[in-house]
Image 1: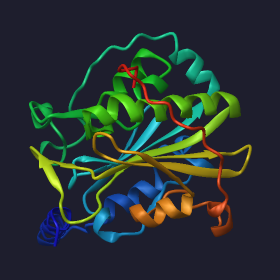
Image 2 (image 1 turned 90 degrees about the vertical axis):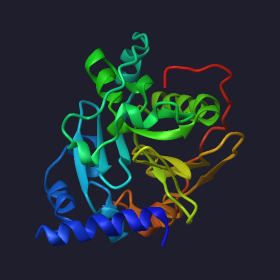
Image 3 (image 1 turned 180 degrees about the vertical axis):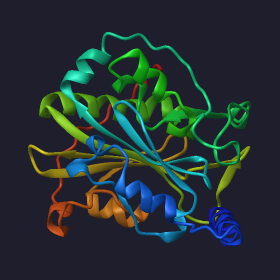
Image 4 (image 1 turned 30 degrees about the vertical axis):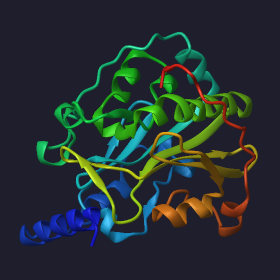
Length: 268
């Protein structure tokens, strides 16, 4: 049993001792939340029941998060990325305001101390550069929207991925984007109380072309990226990320631009 499995099993046992359903928060989130951030208004559905332990849906102005109290990271951050919002975002300078998420209990959330001197960046899932105003920019700096990310990876390859997705959204008019971590294998690490993902993904779906695709990246310096279909990504992460799509639609591959890595840190 790896570190993630042990943590989730312990949380499930605690829920049982308290007479709670380990999966109730997901069930409630499926009925409520912020449907405008998701394609067809539908939240992703967690196929791996162990991942559904201690989850909380959080809604923000232009993105939604499914947060895990076990990993103390998002399982995903979702955006309906529009050309209009991106035009507004270009007018904003970056103002860092990293903060713990006040809507989560201290025992389930990441704290600033977890990242301090860890060697990892606080990596945005819904990026600051997508935020159209100061309020949503501040929201993007919640640690509920962050994962521990290799600094070189975050500032170069990942910054390039974020940039091409913005350009694609401007070209298409809008995209539905889901970004998140993957925890694969048994050799998982922690910084403080936060699990470090082995991989990161960014899924994009174009309503105009009725096709999607994903970038998939190992969370390390010098990593190369892969592109894959929605179906291939879902099989890796154990989440039905676009439940409205048929099997055939998930296999249709949206052409993705090549990535040029950034040499300097941008407005992630």
